[in-house]
Length: 401
Image (tube, rainbow, N blue to C red):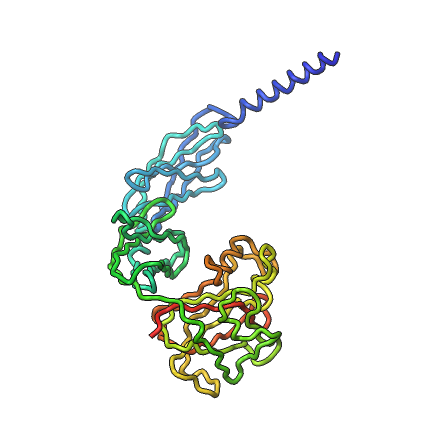
């Protein structure tokens, strides 16, 4: 009896599996009558795209509408739209011009209707418009590329230069939707180098390459042994034994600098002297971080989130006024995961906060900024949205004059 029951169960399972296997590849229904065609097609042309509206054919078996079209000489794309709508978007065209789009009504059994051919005339696609704004400038230790992306389209900025085989190759690729793009690559000598840049979109189209000979600017890390505290009226005093001098002692562990919580005025600010006039390129600020693996202080407590860095070449007025100070940069500390303060940082969050060399999160100083000697940092908000500042180390780079 047990053998009979076991055999019966085996047969039932085998038959069940066989039926399932028959239905896992292809449509639930197959074959059937050919659907009617879409009618009354109207076209709205857009930059690099078009929207087609239409009337659906009658019939209960209609599943979706399919558009087939070429975006360039080699690439064919498809777009699908549900039977519950009356429009379809075709996009990714490589340039402005006339393109044929074939529209099909498709049944539940994947039977296509006869095609309806429509001509669309998309205008210049965004990646070409963006490429026309590309500018290549010398930067500290490399090159800076700027562009305008008014539509905040998803693009890739590809920067190329000659490799060890003297052939052009990608030196860096930046994926972005920034409205006003500005990206730099560094690590090059101060000899003249030809750099190129082009824009690539998400459909594989790419613009012509813009080339420019560039002589990178000389950049070094400024000597922290020359840094000195420079107290002005209304600057915040230190607290908890964390003195300002610890902010440039070349120690990337506690203690650092900590201002006095709850002490007016707000926003908190503090001032120091770098000991030399320098054209600054960037700086790194290392947050209070905590224990490896736990990172209990990153992106929380007094670590700065929004702050402004000011600079001045001449000796500041001892009355603490803002006369003569230049706003160098408005800075925001970024948590890549986007989670709020107090949520444990991801590995990517930690890597961003510490930086590849452990010196901290990097902030750029615009090339247009003047050379300065005195630095004033003004805190607008920390990661706990309170009124005090703490950090472990600050490191500046640029060209001492």
